Length: 117
Length: 111
Image (cartoon, rainbow over all chains, first blue to last red; front, side, top):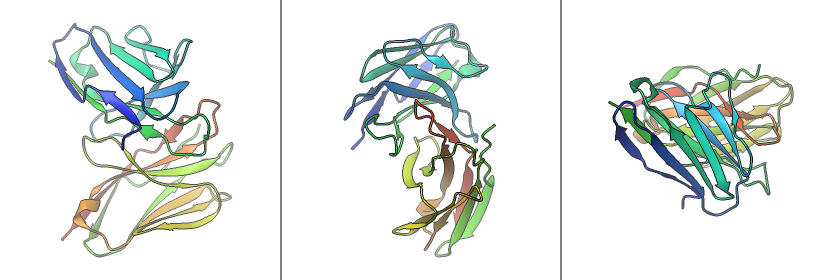
């Protein structure tokens, strides 16, 4: 069964509104979670690293004020796309690895297909 | 940088064998993952190689050469459902455990 759960799986929003995506680790406590974005026919691109109890680390070119990340507990990280625009339409995926053993797979959430109209 | 290179697209015939190659930079390298991703879905784990050599898991096998910075994924007895993108991802042992992904290889299996 899934060990990382992401919600919602699909969302359509109007331009200018905000959308929140949740990522939960079900079987382990994740001090760190990763947020990726994937445009059609392209690979996963790391957007930011979410750190429980501290600020997220953003990759170069990712606007931290636009993509708000909150990691308030050891099992939940949220990504909020603020003032969404059509160019933000993409597939967003979260990931986490069990910190007790880094030599294991990265578990992925189901992904969120965001469409901004 | 930590460029991960793999072919963009491959085509193979049902029942055949296909090998998908991946090269990566060796500095700081810990291990190599392969994931399968169907369109519109999240990636699913296939394999993880840390040591040199071939690891077999059913119809799928994965090979690693640490000295050469090279890995391949071997798919045998191809089925139509194997049509997907295959992502190579390298673990450089960052303290936070993030993976660096290649662009993915889109495999099309034809009848």
